[in-house]
Length: 242
Image 1: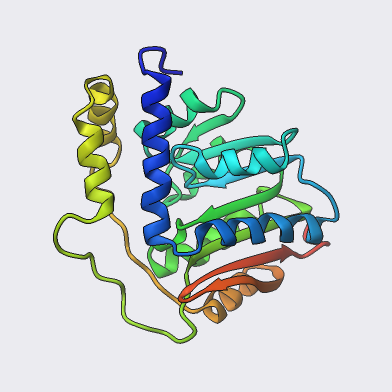
Image 2: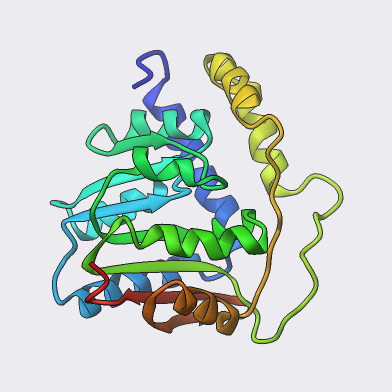
């Protein structure tokens, strides 16, 4: 935890993060609410252990805890600055720094989990890596567990998304954070941790994700919520895979 950070500042930065995420993920609040409701329905109960992959500053984890206050939640991300914000705001949450671009993320992730969430995360990975990632997630799920993936999933294949020009909300948020002296050392650590990493901006329709996950052993996949080109999918593993 970062005792030197002002809790009011941390709360403000996390609120601004959510505002930014709603820009990139229209209907985010409804999507998340639909996902948590679907998890309860498909699991038949509230999950006891939840992993938020690419959970950043823990705003999704906070929503999970509002619905399931007794859940044991882990936030996994490659970014030390974002994880520090999660640590400060949510001391009851376990944070793990790992890069899902490599299978080396599995040991620190721990498990097994009832629910694994990945919201606006898999598009960072190239196509082949997404396929491998689906196979790896199953190693973290309990046999009766559930994977929820929410991302850009248009109804039909389209071109890879291009970065927008000008000052987009993502750049604006990080620029504002860089002006905070308390974050200086963390942002330096972030620059080292993310050196050489970039987003593949991979986009595929929901059917591509269903087939990719099915080939790795997931038994079923369902779109539980859609908003324009954004979809949330629920994946159930094979019950006899272990």
